[in-house]
Image 1 (cartoon, one colour):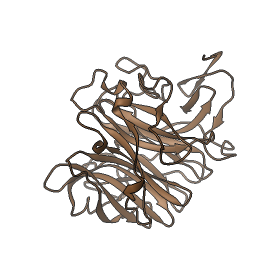
Image 2 (cartoon, helix red, strand yellow):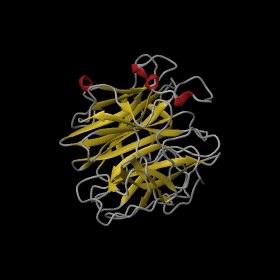
Image 3 (cartoon, one colour):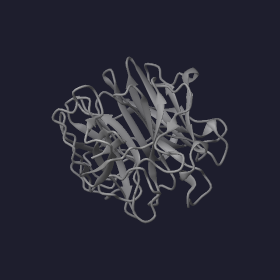
Image 4 (cartoon, helix red, strand yellow):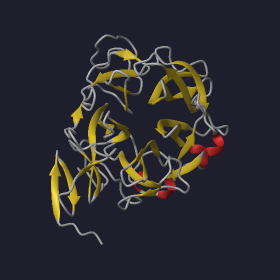
Amino acid sequence: MRKWMTRLLVAGVLATTATATVTAVGTAGAADGVSTAAAESTFPLADPDTVQAKDGSYVTYGTTVGAGVGERCGVTGKLFVPVLVHGSGNTVGVGTCASADALPNGPGSWAEGNVWAPGVVRFGDTYFMYYTASKRGSGQKCLGRAVSGSARGPFTNPVEWACPGNGRWAIDANPFVSGSSMYVAYRDDAITSYPETGISVVRTQSNGMADWDTRRDALKSTDIGWETIRMSGGTHVIENPSMFKSADGYWYLAYSGNNWDSARYATGIARCGTGPIPSTRCTPRQNGAERPYFGYTGTGGLNPYRGLPGNHPGPGGMDFFQAANGQYHAVYHWWNGTRRFPIVATVLRNDGGFYLS
């Protein structure tokens, strides 16, 4: 039984809580000096992903943009993987201009066309990028991997990483590190049959290639129902996964669902157990089978458990990442009816669960 006694309005987010206790989500002591003001970018960037560079600044990547799209600060033309640089140390902020192309030579010989939803993590001294592209000559959406010694790139040695043999899609890869190992969460349609989709988690080898014997199902679209509410198209979409570990010792999975080009695109949160690879499928939180955890609370939304800073339509593609002090932040995009724009917010937790500020 929920014992909701008070309501706390934080940066435009209605955070329901039984007490006034608020904690940061991250390593011990991470709440000290945490800035909790969400930052919005004017650069049109879809499927954002953020990582800290070796110099302490932050780099946000996203889906390919064409020539002349968005403000530029040192780079022109089409950008396969736009780079926004911002913040330093424990101050993350958000970028508003593209300063580089992290994958200037495109997706590699195995693929063709644009790049979608890049995910980057530092593992040792190397930055690994996983990205979505169309397999050359087929149009099948598959995943590639590229490497760099710098968060800003250029990323090189692009190779095919995952491309199901049955023509199903593998997209939206998001790498993360736990202990001495790297893992990748991704939308893996090979674990389902059309029209369903799924999410897998797999451990990698030191070169970033997958150890497929470790792959496990994390979630399937059959585990929820809100991804099909008033949807257009036939596919039951769950995608854009991101794994993070909370102070309660559990791993959580953030994922997007419904149509990306609508106010209904939203974010679910599922609890996955105490290890980075789920031993059983993750469990959606806060009545998560019927409604998203985070989403737009206005007309056309899906009655989410919690709203988000600014209450913009279509919030999805959420990536959880840590600042220098271990505090978790989330970067995600919203949809204005034509383009998508990134927001960076702090991840906090009270008695009602996670919220962003």
